[in-house]
Image 1 (cartoon, rainbow, N blue to C red):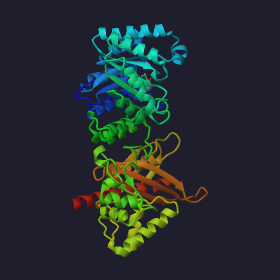
Image 2 (cartoon, rainbow, N blue to C red):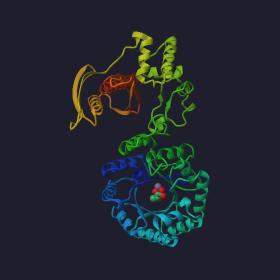
Image 3 (tube, rainbow, N blue to C red):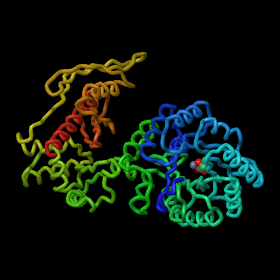
Image 4 (tube, helix red, strand yellow):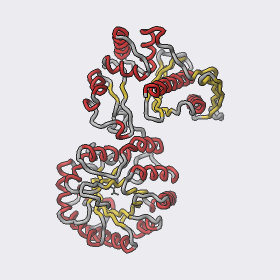
Length: 507
Ligand code: KIV
Ligand code: ZN
């Protein structure tokens, strides 16, 4: 563990181990390697790469990660048995994290061992790891439900056997900041090596409990990107780090500007999407809709932004809706290069609110359509991308394929793509043709039937994000859902391009 100064907190990332224990998540070697490289760029101190004993694939992945020449310490998880530790050592890791249950309930019903057997397995495993010249981190699993005197005995025994760090896991997430603080103080009173905390989120307190551990003297926190992990997950890396930096005035090795990209990569590769209101990395974490807020942040961002979006690789987003005020909408239109007069702006705001009151999401495209109808010819509908042709093939034993013909900046292009279904294929084909012009990522796709029956109109609402993190939304309605999807995508790309070109002009 680095001890650059007393205020430094080491970040032990277990996305590739506890995070991969998220139900439904399974990563290939290549995916684990890609995440490990990103974690290394991010600046974590330790990467827990996996549990080598669990499978051949896991061994291969851990080995590949140790071979990748990363700066972080590469760690593997092992129970306190020699076969587990041997499997970890065989992967050439720099450290082994060895653990054993210490609570009565787990000793009896999970590992079927007596406290004395647990003590001797701990000592044997720690000594064995140290005999191989590796860094050893020891965890008394379920520490927070372990009888305190036994917990102290095990931790002391592990330290005497040579453990370099003692990690205190709140395995079932039952601590509060107050009880966590007390526990870490108790362990610290008998242990001299650095103490780490590993908190689960069963009651939504993993981050708060981890920070309480630091207040009590822990110098390392176990975290996962996006808070992935068993059941309700582990303490989220991005939340822990930002709280350490901005609230606790502590240092970490994390380059916070890479937090958002890291979160997106992990969400993409694990398939676990992020809730919109998730702190730091959620879609809405830096979005403002209500009048008071949008006016505030456009004048002095600090009014409603405790964290500068750029600090975590994000952009502020003003959203039009029924709660919007004049200055928020004025600022949004300015981004698109549109400057309505006072009366026009008042009418645009009135119509936006009217749409919002009907329960509609007001997309960027809606705002421009309203503006166009209020301001008339002044706002020309600039379309950089236009659809001229679309054909899709789908059915049983046929790979869904779409061919699209688009006009881009006045020139015509054609391409085909396959997909999981006709909509996927068509959207991919549009993205392929427009990639050079507008590299956008589909962030959200929603379809609603606006009328009943099999001839219902399908309304598609799409959100896309450009490479700089700017998000725009658009909608389209059609009785053919493939057409509605392609038109919505093209509308979104046009808005994204228009906004980008205006930003470039204003810069
Ligand atoms: O939650 C837990 O107790 C663990 C151990 C392996 C440390 O993940
Ligand atoms: Zn855990």
